[in-house]
Image: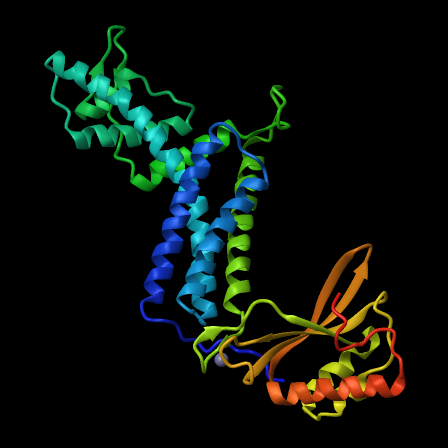
Length: 356
Ligand SMILES: [Zn+2]
């Protein structure tokens, strides 16, 4: 029994397809979540679904492009999760900018009408950045302040108040200010379907909520990608192993280590020796066997698992997974049936056929 190790190979063009698909999905999902989030935002559900969609994109490309590159697939999925989370903020930022820009454009048109100057697009953008920075300081940014920033020279209003232009903020400062502004407003959590005001969790609560959302999105995306990229692949036929597995019950739960050891030796009698009578209503050891659909006589992928059936629910805990030579496995299974027959001339359940 050899552990399955992905070969690190892929189809041609897989890297680019993975990166483009996952990152594009991430941006689209993050944006969509933001749009829907304007009406309703479900705690937990949103980040889980967002992460799952990013993870599924990574999974699809991994499957289709036959990617056996765990580090790359998982890395891109994690990056996709981060981007998805960030896109949610990004769209919010663009929407806020656009709303402020509308106001600034009005002030600019007014200045032009009064013959005070002709603000250019770059003046307008700079003024929007400044407004965003001020927005974090609770929005003390009226038309006069907009006008001095647009013209980049001091102005006095009717009451003799002097306003001076502010230094250029960087784009990062504007974005950070926007995020701080959002946190300052806080997040209100209320029960679904209830029209009450709910509880505002405050700025720190909001930051913690954002961080937990990020962690959930990234973890869900990464886990789905990880699950796919470690699926067994037949390097000889260049294809994934068939998904449905044959589950063969082999021994009572106490024989788990003996079953693993038997498969390790490859000795045709070892599995039979590990067998002892068992009751399938109690925990038992089973082999989940998967084959390459193109070469059933090649290597099999075996998952030695402890199975517990309780109240109609099947719980499965994997003890060891790996590749086993098909011929050797068949010989061991035949030996197992023989051992069971010998011990119990009329077994209540044929262990090799018992599939819960
Ligand atoms: Zn094969």
